[in-house]
Length: 462
Ligand code: CMX
Image (cartoon, rainbow, N blue to C red; front, side):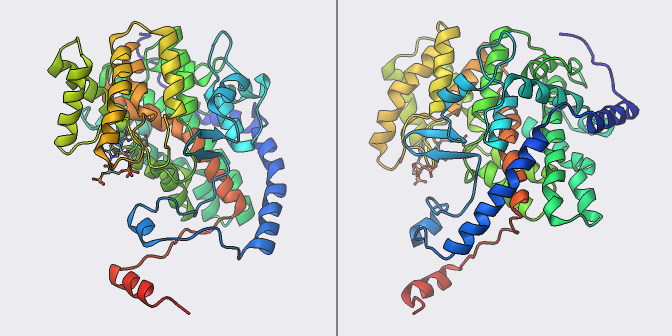
């Protein structure tokens, strides 16, 4: 622990922001700007020549079944294949692990690189990610009113509620909201959304670090200052009081793989939807975080650890296959889901689970929770198959992350979804910037009452 951090006052924050504005260390904005004309022209031409082509049918079942499979969204940053899993701008997770730059002495790619890749489509070089690290550090200061606000929130309010609330009030810093109010041109919206997104990502680790310190370390501030000369994850880990090298490497990997899962998942879709009303990036992302907080989405990582601990409590440390089967059936018969298993799109084991299992086997093979996680992987899928209704019996990303975090000393499971949230910003904010670069309109799908839908089906328009 580094003790209480130095408190930045408003003047220092202002100085840091001005310094950033005038001596930006990264050329990411220029690189992104250079991509826009071609992409916008391509969409314009595509819509002009093919705009009326039909790309799929919508059945009544799809409408009642959470819009599964309806092709209705544009998302440039990543594509999810049911069998292969996620590809970030065309790159699989192993390819990203190999190609994205790493911090000095680190084994895992850094989140700065995935942000660059998702926004521009290019694999950045070392100098480019180092510049992003610097820029985020430089933009990271939180205004005092955020700390005042956090201090007033009771400690036992769920960390995700605190996270979302602080992000929402930070919208008073939005450059987009100010520019919009002063009548900036639509073609320039993306520039302000970019600035807000960079500021928001930079501040998220400080918000999360402060919430962690406040709820679990008896401090009202993150446990140290942000250092401009190190990467985002190292700063983030230190702000939460962690300096274990392997933990920091796992955090890097964690932040990369949770970033994006194409556009239809609840957190990504919500951020995009709210952004379409031209709510600023802070409000849009906070809305996405409220979706991520749900047990069927990001909160599953907390629930997995809680479930594993219930197993250990009920069965004892020596969990056998038989006992685990019994416990799983008990969970299902009580009407609950097995957290960390199943997926709305995936139909195979999630590669994000696989890469975390690989990390665990390399660094913490002898951990008893890792062994239990492996046993769950053996026992649960056949049971879910036997249930008959589960489309995908295999583990998703949340089945493994908590086990690793717990091993490295982060035992506060309520906090796990906040980490997911920090990572999700790296995917959904680049998408939001693209939304504004394309000038996408306010989203407004058609809905029906059941009566109106029955009428439509019985008397289809001629
Ligand atoms: N345990 C028990 N039942 C499950 C199940 C699981 N892990 N996964 C699906 N089912 C059930 C569903 O609840 C549904 O039952 P009902 O028809 O009685 O309502 C049925 O199987 C069919 O569901 P599905 O089509 O296979 O799955 P969905 O697309 O509706 O839902 C998901 C996907 C992830 C919400 C679901 O698999 C689930 O609840 N999993 C556990 C929670 C979880 O791990 N969520 C994290 C997902 C990843 C993330 O977003 O972070």
